[in-house]
Picture (tube, rainbow, N blue to C red):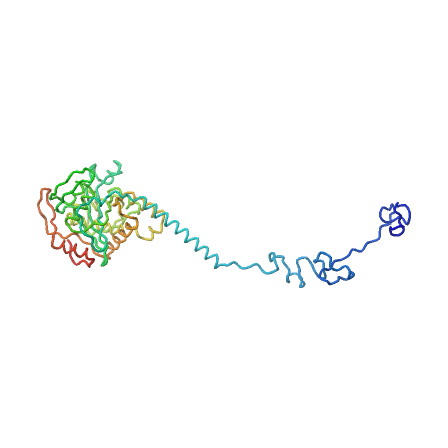
Length: 417
């Protein structure tokens, strides 16, 4: 039986000669291919039995990328992104802002913590107040002894010439101040270096020798046995316990002023002192580190001598504290970090002083120097003669009243000199 269409035999030689394998030029008739309609809707000309095949995209009216409504209708994905034809979602700005703020907070937190530990590690905790003998009882608030020494540590010969510090190798106290942070306000009391006081007995921390009690000028205590004996002497003569100690030398002070870009000072009259190098005309001037140091060391042309110099020191300290706390310094890392590095490298503190406590001392000092508190000299009764030369005698009646008010946390009513 011949199964080939139109009588074509299986050997390809019988029949009309056209079809599969034919050598005739007559083409094979067209075949009808089934069209699939999976949705059950029969396309025109497609038998119903052919429904249910594959390729659902070839049904009535379906064109690539277009829905029933044509271009732009449902299913039109061109220009709209992929998916079910919905428009691309708008940016979630609230979420973006939240993440930006969170990132900023994390960066500031990490920077702040890193800065704290960096600064805390630079503190030179070299003074052991645990060696101070016979200490008075604590009162209200916190008391700091702030000392400016004539240390030339780290200064080259050129620096000594520029700063006019001389070539001495010892260390004396050029300035001493008690800063008290109390519940009724903050107070700063300058202790004139030429004050005649009693240096009490003391066992040297380094030498181990017993130092006998003696009448001396206040700055001699530091020269004899350093910060520990100075703290012991101040406590002995005032009855006020010193909680913390901070000291800065010549070079550190000048470097701090320079790192801040200078400090402005105004003078009511010309100031000139060949010993310190101070030479300023009346009016306001921007002082660099060397000039600022010359001003606070000026003794011989300071009104009131040693008492006048302590007032100058308080003025410059006020200007320095205000300059270091301005937004142009605090918000400028290129100015803040060098200033912090210079100041901390030159600062010597007691072993119990934390960076947090140092910052509290600074803000208390800034508040007092800015007018929020009391600034004064230790009350003086007058000048006296001593084996060490002319000296200042404290008015002990007013001194005791001042100390009691500080210890009790009361507002200061005593007047200084």
